[in-house]
Amino acid sequence: MIPENVAAAANNCEINAVVEWLAAHPQSVNEVDAGGESLLVLCVNESYDGIETNQDNQLELVRYLLSQGADPNLSSGSDDETPLYACCGSGRAHPFPHAQLLVACLLRAGADPNLKVAENAPLFSALDCFLGADEGSWVLPVVAHLLRYGASLDNCEGNRSAEEVIAEEEQRWPELVKGNLEFQAAAILIRGVRAAGSWKKYCRKWGPHRDILRLRSLVVRGRGTTSDTWLAGMVRLKENGLVWKVLSFWRDPDDVEEIVLPPDEEWPEPYIVRVYD
Image (cartoon, rainbow, N blue to C red; front, side):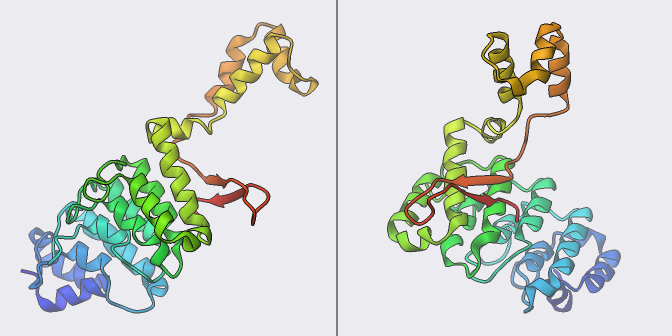
């Protein structure tokens, strides 16, 4: 069992105390304290105030614990909460600006984006925070990271899909939704991934490959503009390989940097929301 003082150190992200104890007890990285919480869960459920000041300490301790073999899928505590579920929101009302860094770190270490806590997936943990958070912009990149690493849109909350969760929020809190551009962007992102069939296919829609090949097709048929002379030259010279050479410098995108919100009565022009800002 983790001693009380070490559990308190992990809960306050005091990395030196945790490192010292683990150096003497390396086999105990996945043990729990008296409350049934692992070091990793204690760390991500920090107890200190001033989270922005200490966010570097928290991220450093998470990385250290993972490097020592901490299991990112080990549920612990009275709620059997996983580290990923906790980082995705877990009912937080206060700003959590570095959540995306913690989530990305856990996912890279093998955290399962579909491992549920009390029938709720990490994606629901994030969506459930959006409209109740003091500053919800940190939730959008968390949603994007989960989708990128394979979070399912089905059975997000019990048997309900992510789209059903969003639709209920839109119906219950229309004014909050209207004023939360990041929530609107997340809704567009989730519905777009569903329509495309996968995250990868959704990302490909924003890549240059199709646009360049479509432009090349127009030039071949004599329908290109004078501004397309560089591509027209390739076609005239039958340098088809050169077109593919150009495309080789652009790999298919594996992420989405921005979401475009459609215009409405308040915003007469399309509005761009940056995903990771």
